[in-house]
Length: 288
Image (tube, rainbow, N blue to C red; front, side):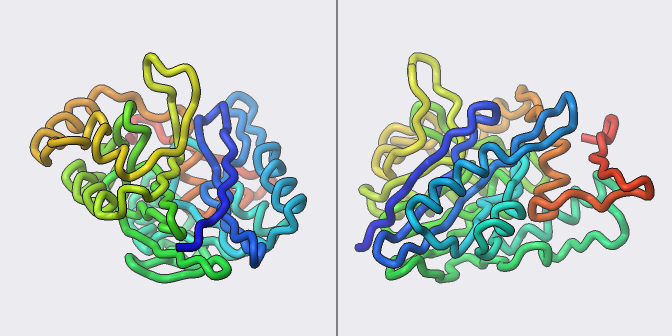
């Protein structure tokens, strides 16, 4: 099996890892889960994190083929439109993004023109849909549970799992967002566990579990199957659902959920400017 090269970028403010998977022979590249810097105090954005990706791609002479979102993130804004403008490539997300758009379009009272059919993205990927990265096979794997639209991406010998799994010492993603389900997440993880043990696993976040000194974002399917504190070993669905439900009930909302979702449901674009020429993000009170 041809293996992609992977370069990862850790965004400290959001604990997000953006990955660039690329084929050395063809120079084709895929960007997964890019971050747009956002200051919640001032409402200002900047492209520092995205510019690091551009510098790497240009230094390597890579050609961006796809810019993939594993799901509509609730903890950071996407820089996909900026990267597409600078590097080209098609934006991709799971086909079930329409379910997320329908819910949050209502939460944010989006403008009547806001489409809830996923058409803001260039490609809506279905489960099992095949793509390519040079001579490397790429397969979209629908892995819902954290959100309905979550998609993991198998690229050669590596799978990029978004928020479905964390490092074995940290566990799994929350399931209490609209459309989330602990039972569904358990089944999605079993789908990932059917991959070969040696499959490399790249995560979208790391929060440095207690007792660990460094941030880490790469493991293997075998390590997750054996040692994941929530689903590894002999963990069954009933015990996982009980644990996940009780744990999620005590979790605070991500601090950037309100700006993030209303931007990310638009494929990283901002809402249209109002009649004074200024773009605003809404903060719905007592709605979530």
